[in-house]
Length: 410
Image (cartoon, rainbow, N blue to C red; front, side):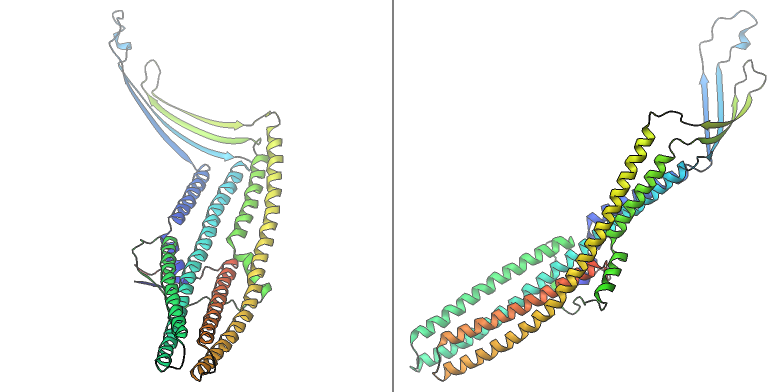
């Protein structure tokens, strides 16, 4: 079986995810578009060739038959190079580069979200398995109480309703165990779905490598998040993209100078030579566009300002997410300490209830109630520890920490 801790689950989810493979293709497409733009400035050489055979020959006066050429050929070699664009090519390159950044940051956002989801799914499975242990411990304790009750009933020390009550409580708790087992299997189904595993794959949880709380203070956590979160890079790329769009719009009416050299070899015919060449320097400059450029620049500037405001919103949201998780972790440490104290108190009450029952000073229902209080305290503690682990996972994700290890084989 696959034995997974939270980090291994995250690594496996990222390794198996078809969505991330789609993101990788988007990055590759953006990189290909960048290479296309970069190639626009390169020296270009083209070769073309034509061969034409004509027939039948027309009727020509005697002595002129040789002027009719049945087979014609032409070969042309063309070299071209853009010399100056006054910023137009540079703007296109900027747009293409930011397009690559945008695709890469979108993939990083997906990776971080999927890693967090995989860790949470595994922690939920670990939580339900722990509650199963609580339920089984409760069943064992109640069965011991039932054994003591049966013995005291046979000795004539207690009434039969005590026996019936103990048996009913054991049966009820055993049904809870069955329900818990069903919930655990549903957790495994959900985990396999997140990890993109076959639903027949056996999966086990390791609790030896639970997430650790970052040692930094709140301000340092926020600073790291603002620097590392892919959402921040995504918003920054959006600003750069719109700034590049402004530059591209501003250069759209600038002239372009290019040079083209052409050498042609063709059937001579009446010409004195079959070989010819030409060199052309071309200047292209849009004159009137009806105000389209000014409108395009204004629109690009408006979108750029929106992108800057969006960047501020993302920064505020990231800082708030980090602060919320950080404060929640502090509160959960206190909650766990309180749950541990409550569990110790409940166990002491259970011990006293058992002694009272065995000494004919209390009823069996007191033991049952005390055992239920222990189970509730254990559940509260397990829930608080789950919430703590989830909050730590959330904080590390909010800080942009993937914490990946090598994906396990299976």
